[in-house]
Amino acid sequence: MNSMPITDAAFALCLALLLLAPLAIAGVALINTGLGRCRSAAQALLGNLAIVAVTSIAFALVGATWIGGAGHVVQLAGKPWNWLGTGPYLLSGLSAASPHAQLALLFEFLAVALAALIPWGSGADRLRLTAGCALAAVLAATVFPMLVHWVWGGGWLSQLGVTFSLGAGILDGGGAATVQVLGGVSALAVVWIAGPRKGKFPKEGLSTALPGHNAVYVLFGCLLALVGWLGWNVAGALLWLHAPLSALPVTAINTLLSASGALAATFSVTRFRFGKPDASLCANGWLAGLVASSACAGIVTPGESLFVGAVAGIATPLLVELLELALSIDDPSGAISVHAVGGLWGLLAAGIFAAQPGQLLAQLVGIATLLGLVLPLVYLLFWLLNRVVPFRVDTDGERIGMDLHELGGGAYPEFVIHRDESYR
Amino acid sequence: MKFAGLLVMSAGFFLTIAALVLFPDAPPRVAFVLCGLAVECLGLAVAVRGHMDAARGEGR
Image: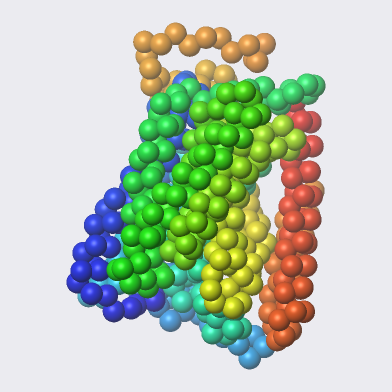
């Protein structure tokens, strides 16, 4: 693990910020729940909780071993390629580790929980609870630690500056690659494997609109996510970018500006396209701005951050529409547009606006790795997992709703749930 | 078709790695990295196309 000396003040500040970061998890959990249907709301929120628990256990038992240490180094063309970490098993010796290493591990525990929540939102209304927990365990034990080692743990992507003179190696202060894009491509894999919700894409005609059941959850989730993201990006700037304390307020301002620019852009786009602003798309835009800021909030200026957010906010509603209407991808939470594309855009923007020569190429290599290696690997793992633990609920379960089918009771027992015409 | 697309995406990644190893000069390295990304986009398009056929074909 990349261990740097850290002052007492920086340690205390970083710890306090990381204790705010779970609010981002709470925000994403509320967004996932609100964008699903009311007859699956309790299962969705319970799934979010269960995934946080499962990822924490799987990461502690297995994943944390692959992150730190000297790592397995392969010599290729005379250059060292550090592919996998070799840390102590079961977090042994943690109390004796350096303060930086302890904070880094706490950051990673929270990061893996958020990464695994993202595909759960995309599989809403048809993904079984056991399948959600199983895929979270797979992510926490295999792909996430490998990627974290490459980006934050001294692995080959972080060493691109030393080995190939590409800037400072990949820059990812807040987890755009390790959390957001990983979560986004996992969401794509889940959607591909589980398929669309029943009645979403009829054989003829346009796709059926299945709107989220609670816009208040979604929008309040966005506010919670802002607080968590502020903690996340500022702590990440301290831990991974080694920013001085004086640079941290700008990182926080950049995070806020990116989200604000994104919301203003999405608000304008949806107002222009539909005549009125769309609440759920605006929430997606806000989140896309936060996601994009994960990569570049510690690097860019406030003006550049506003621009990054605005681009993310313009792209998000257009992508959500493109994915659903043109590409037949049923993604209830919009995670592919928000987390995968927003994260990739943030990584690219960090390369465009960074001062070091060669940084853009380092970021492009990181993007190529996420698309060309991580996505196929995640899909293959999930495809195999689906053979053991089927992802999709049966037709009857989908008809009566995930709450009744999996939990035996609904989230809103006093509500009358109308008949779904799409099942005729 | 989806697996074919994902294999093409992996090929794009290895093209990117090959660019780093084979070309020490910046211009050809940048060009090959961009080619690798273009191949990945092509693979993604193939995989998405495979999904579209399946999603509509099942009439869900």
